[in-house]
Length: 200
Image (cartoon, rainbow, N blue to C red; front, side, top):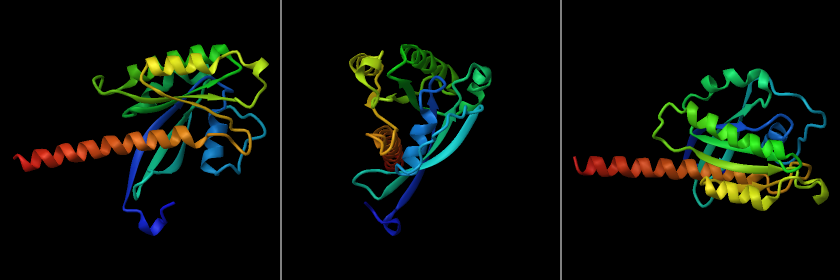
């Protein structure tokens, strides 16, 4: 782990975190930002959008990416007003619950809504798909990890199977993946700008 005094840059990235109500979006975020110390014991529905900031150390660099996580309510009450809050967002985390086949179908529509909300329709979204509650018994699973993986791969997404139940299992993966993707995009833009200046 790089010490705070060794950090050379802090980048900032907005991320939409989407999925149906009760799939565990807020629990996943809470466990990641608290390093596994805070798991919400009682369900509280997110109203509209909660913004949470999480820091990701980009592996093998001295760069930190601050993810501004737009924890999006899965309730239909807020669905119509969400798109305007996603202005300028090109990174997203789609979350499903392995015990709910409906939640798997829902991430597909969430993905389409995110695409429609882009200000720049030519710009690609960087999305990760996350399956939660994998700690629950296999007989309760109604979504196979293989089918979720296949859909993610077909849509150019990285896939992560996690459990937010303390102590947490593989919860860092999706956040680190988004941080790395944003850093890579940043590096590519800097290189393109440098080349353009060199050839001016």
